[in-house]
Length: 116
Image (tube, rainbow, N blue to C red; front, side, top):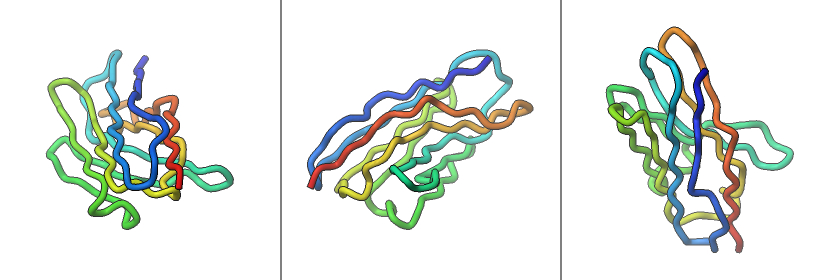
């Protein structure tokens, strides 16, 4: 069984910063990619950013230039540095991992609230 444990969510004023972290643990062969998705009330879950094992990154247009994703293959962790936060960034943020042989795995989610 694989567990993804997120940390770092919270309440911040517009323009502020937060850093999310996620650690994968359990029995798996390797991780192909990790990343973050978010879901705001009444909206579908959407991609925020992903990073592959090779270090290739992908960002949603709405966060480019403000968010930075980083990963540590040895520690099986991924982090998301979020700067210049906007009220529209308010959502539950979910850690995601694409596990070799096992497929997708998701964390429980962490709330990020940005006040105006």
